[in-house]
Length: 48
Image 1 (tube, rainbow, N blue to C red):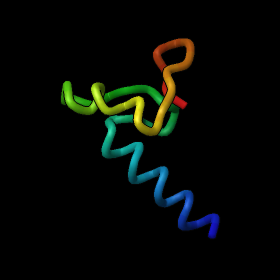
Image 2: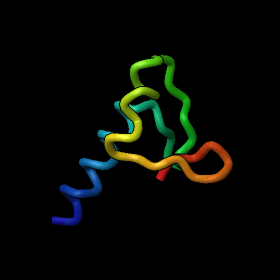
Image 3: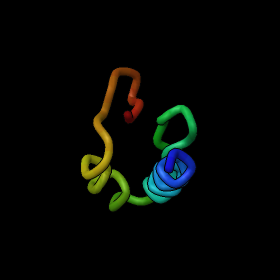
């Protein structure tokens, strides 16, 4: 159960251009437009 959940979030983070610290490193405007589907922007331009 937990491994599946962790793999899901790792995959979703990668698809949205986020590194393991929640910092956006993507290259696509579309990634940022869709970021709010799964993530909220926190302080320091990090996503949680």
